[in-house]
Length: 385
Image (cartoon, rainbow, N blue to C red; front, side, top):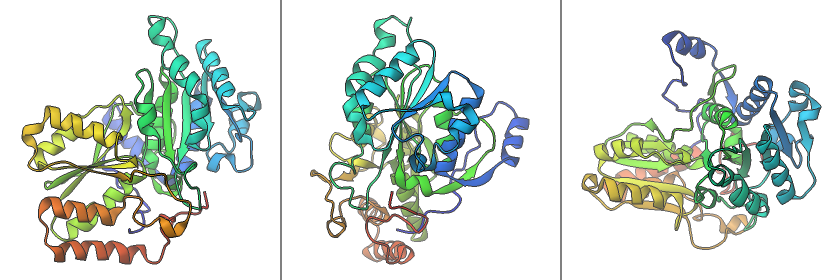
């Protein structure tokens, strides 16, 4: 697995309405980390709208939730940055109530598992209030959830539960992979009048990329093509998109053209970009951060199979976690998580690449990765968290 590029491979301009605005935004871009991009989205949204408030366990802690909430009080006012007790169901209920009376709360869970204690509030209150009130009540709530793995996180702190939250109508689910999208989609989520779950991968927090200065909000409109290709379409989200891009680069070097589609927005699922790519390639692979069975990738495969079946030249392939909890021991982790090498091998089998070419591509990935252990993603990672 080669190191993630210092400049993330996004080949699309930020949302804009004029050539002048596009050029101005391009000129304002600089390279920052994903965590810094999240922080900018929070601060700039808070400065733009005084109804935005921030609630979390550890929001005022020196670690500042992986650096993403650092300086919120200085920029937006201490009265809008609220340290909450360790009572996830209660703090989420407070946030839902605040949203119903005109605030735009942003709550942050340092691990996605903590949100399981707030499922009643999220699923039965936040997600349903607009529906059961016939649109009279809105819940403009953003719920940040952090996922990730490594450093002995183990079965209870290494889970990726996006499929759980994507199941419920009324919740929107966003899962950015790149710093530019992290800033734009989080700002877009805060401006949205519906509850939005934003899932951030800890390993992505350290990746860097080109991000415009100033406030901008991206529409929560779904997947984007980040690598074009003609032989296979790889659909992924969050950190798995980075792995898919690495795999695509390695495959390109041995003559296999892989398209990579970054899901970005899991619910509502807009499969148009996926359909367009599969119609060109005839092959589909999905790579989940969570378990492959009942995962988001399964939903993508179902959409393609039911609406673009004639375009498929081979059976779709789904990658994800195996059917057991994640072990804590570093020695047991190899082979558990999908990575660029496994993607290459599976794509090679789908497309009929020779064993020699597959080996060449996987060796290039292994050499670039070097001696990093299985629970460290890249040299850019500055963990343990």
